[in-house]
Image 1 (cartoon, rainbow, N blue to C red):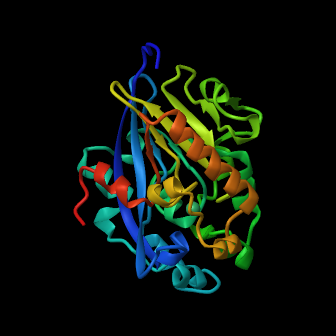
Image 2: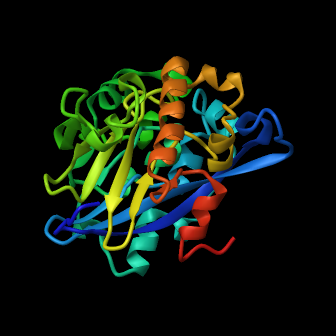
Length: 289
Ligand SMILES: [Zn+2]
């Protein structure tokens, strides 16, 4: 990167995990169980303050999925979370109160990314407009099918939302020079200083966002659930087609997946991580499996 006067710092955390069959992640080589840790970020911007990006699980998910239809969600992805592992509890250990945050950025509204949202009332919520409209409109089985547990979503979401739309993004110019138009990724400069960008990663969930952060010594591209495992992305192994049942758009997922493979070739020096990838756990300082 050329000189960038504003650099931010970040920390990765995990709040709980769920389990699923490994063959869903890797239909070629998967066996046994896969653990999906719910990883989230704390971002520290020198002028805009502290933001969380996603929130991980909270025991509220276990409570919410005791009854039908949400009980199906708990069966599909059995979750494990202690109350001292929540985003709020881990921030408290770092001396940070929910009211110290300037805002929260939500990649998408699947329960393992938003179960902690209610612990952070009042602060602005940055999310994709399409993701917000979907989460506010789905109900009952329709919500469960889309990975959404309505009781985890703040009732004042619309009032607090600062939405990202399809038009508000610009294609990454550096990437455009190396890639074909349709397979390039789109980023939006969040603070207007080039330090933090939100990436549009359609397919897995409606309006899914990733985040790219330029720190003093490296660039992180946290591409959320656009792939579940870096090794399968590198090998070009797509998840089992059974995920089509709850993915938003399989064709878009495949396009995003191949754009990420290209991205990694164009920017091998960037730290490309995914929410649920085991490799990501190496970057969590407080993590003790
Ligand atoms: Zn997801």
